[in-house]
Each structure stands twice: as structure tokens, then as C-alpha cells.
Image (cartoon, rainbow, N blue to C red; front, side):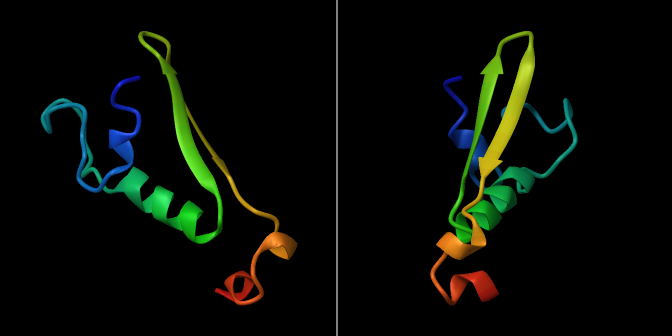
Length: 70
């Protein structure tokens, strides 16, 4: 839980490179895409039980006029 905010940063990893594959950019990319669309992204986790990643997006009619066309 203490590292939940950190995992959405570019090149941030919680494990050594030899433990799990990945470059540390996937969740940062997701955070950027969700943010562009006016949403939020987060994670809930419990040690030994795994993690659940979630996101919300604004409805198109709630976005500023030019944002809906990007």
C-alpha cells in the first residue's frame, strides 16, 4: 500500500528487473491516457491477495468541447 502512488510513475518498479518482466512505463502510460480524458486511475491491494486496478472516465458530454475531439 505504501508504494501504490509510486507505481504510476515512469520507469518505477517495485521488484528487481530479474524478478518480473516490464520496463515500468505501462501504468504511467495508462495514467496519462486516463488523465487526458478527465478520469482517475488507482489501485487497491492486499498483501498476499493481489491488486485491483481501476479507472474512471468522464462522459463525453461532460468534457470541454475540444477535449471530446482529441
